[in-house]
Length: 544
Image (tube, rainbow, N blue to C red; front, side, top):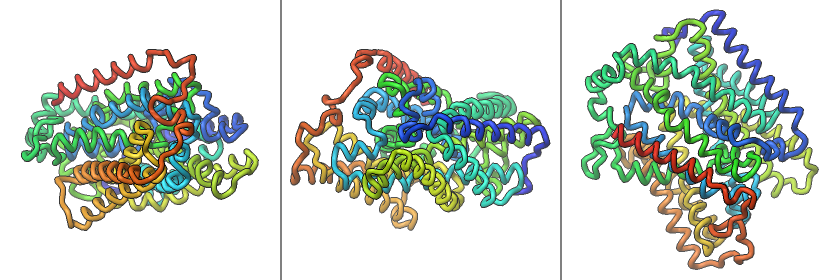
């Protein structure tokens, strides 16, 4: 990749090094306020909504968004917006308005801990182990993406870049815990936007504005289909570039994958759990949903621009779809601005790693070690172990980063992981929250069956035993199958086993949620959620 190495100078290096110094400084500053395990793992449940809201969306702005969505923009065109306006915002609103009262009201420290209270230790253990595995795999994606950028920047081998990135993130999370991650994520949110907005503006101007881009997309391999979100998704006559019908987009993506990710992924929910009260916890994902309305214009648009200005994009290792953003940076940005853009890329990848590693250390410590391996230890012992878990998780992520390196579009890999780990978990959660009859045994066996169904679909697809229109289509079908299998098994097992007594379900089932009386009557979350949904609907219609 040396032939496309970025043309950086001392100014660019100075900007990048300054950013790293600030990030590490935040870690040292946050360390002073760690007095208990609640401080380390959940920031003492003391943060205001605007902080947790920006951290919530920034935690998602890792390789999944920046490299992955730009890659999807180049590979699938406008249809990628479905991952925002259908595949994110409705689920984020549902999390804020419906599920946060259960999470925050029951005072659980993690998403798996909810399963312990609602079902039993068996389902709790299964989800804790699978979630720990998922976070390490996803952290590896972000480490690889950052190493890819360092290869452009310095010509470093991928493995060296992975190790350097891992050391930086491990340092500030180990020092300051979740607070360090969250405050850095707020900073990273603005740095990421400062990096991507100039690329989108300059690139769009270069291709002759939106009209010019449309003309060039029509002449590309995507053709006219690359300019529409939902056209060409009729059942039996799919011409949309993603290769899936509207049923797959609405049910597989918009319902199963999206709700599975946004409502049960502790790497996101953890930010809301650190809020100072229920009102702030509910507003956290809703505040995060506001920028989600507009992010396609700085995430997907550059990928579409790259498709028409970078010859042979997606054909070689140097010209992978994953490289769309770095290639545009090298083409359009002058020195100084190039340093800011590189800093923004690095910030996004570190935010993704930090979100998953902070969730990993919390789940390993509070959901596995504390209840099952080392119960009854002093509180400071768990804080110390959490720091060890951070280092251990980062170390394992170095290995999983090498798995991610085998994909030329990181979003395809991420969506496959979500279909296996998040989709069945969402089925268990949604049934368990709304059906008090669901039994502890059903919670376990539904999860196992759904996870196996999605994993088997993925393996058979990779072995070319079964075929789909694209990798993304496989993840949508796999997620849908996981949800259905989990639901069917949960119902069948429930009908044959004993439920928990009603007295043990307070705060865990719909209609029995614990709430803070001082904020239970606030209409602010509902109004905010309604406005965001209307915005998503209008944008979907515009780009139909």
